[in-house]
Image (cartoon, rainbow, N blue to C red; front, top):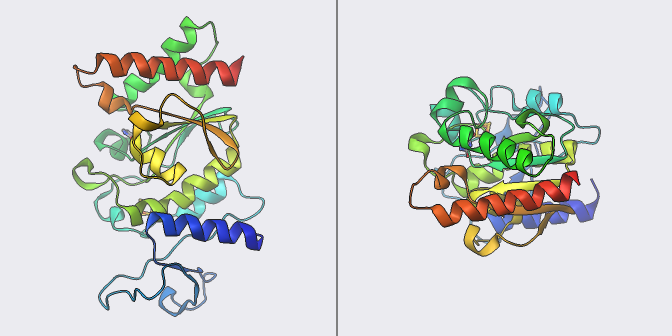
Length: 252
Ligand code: URA
Ligand code: SF4
């Protein structure tokens, strides 16, 4: 990785509120506690003595693959979300997908099955992808796209992932995005949008125009869980518009 890439990566962590980055030692090396900080992201904010040391995954290696990422995740305990999980939900779909959806994190059904978006919200997402494609004359099923989440373990009570959890687990998502290199990314909901765009804006502000994640065009739309609430008729219509737009961009 070039110095510029590293600098950008550090800036990104800083935006997410991560204070220090640690280089992971190769296995067999010293314990993470002995690892040297590679950067002090925020100056003069010493961690509380009781703060747990966070072990970050290694930065994206060249020649990375989905198999390698999955192996690096292993039986991950890098953030507290590991405590309540049953299965790590890595991602699902076509590894050569041209369109990649990013959700927030696994729910109960995903935690039980290990597959993203299989519960009620997942069924709606599948319907939306396949229904919109069909209506627009684009031959596409869920199996043609790739679906992943910002965090790979289920947050307790389905709470929103914390900034540190997003920063740590987000590195695996970024590696997935870099390996798959889709033609476009669709961020589902504010958590995915924040993780990928780094800002604080939510869906209402971000939807309706194109953004970029590392040069890959990105669109933000409502999370399907939000659309499941009956009063969101207008949001539903907008989500269908967003989906139509991204499908035509990718598959025309
Ligand atoms: N919600 C998400 O954000 N992701 C899933 O995988 C399921 C529900
Ligand atoms: Fe590891 Fe991600 Fe699970 Fe946290 S959420 S334990 S970083 S796989």
